[in-house]
Amino acid sequence: MEDRRKSRRLELNSELVIKGLQGDTQEAKIEVTDLSKTGVGFTSPAKLEIKGVYEANLRIWTGEVIHSFLKIVRIEVNPEDESVFNYGATFVGMAGLDANKISIYDMIHNGTQE
Image 1 (cartoon, rainbow, N blue to C red):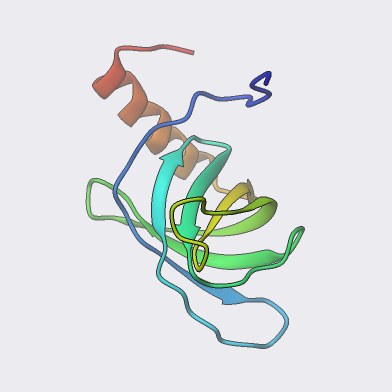
Image 2: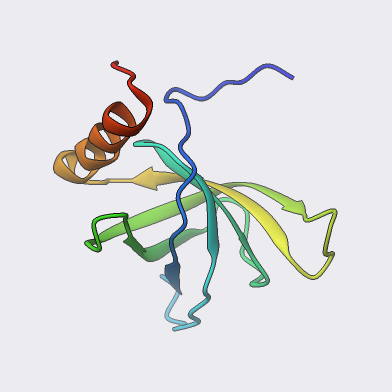
């Protein structure tokens, strides 16, 4: 399968708290499996909707919290545990400064430049 990502993905242990924009206040802990300045991959037992947009607070490696919005673009059942889902999401309207923090982490820890 061809990788169509615009930015290289990073693995980062973190948590997100997701709230729906449709008025519900469902919060779900998730496990981040990869991260780039354009999107995030994560696992969660929460049932989210494809193309749904969710508010998120992402705690990054520095301890800072990045407030963002995620649009779900991929959903798969986790083959190891069918009660957990693997999600792919893109950031919607992420501030450039926050995206740069992710890029800087990549450059420092992986020696890459864009």
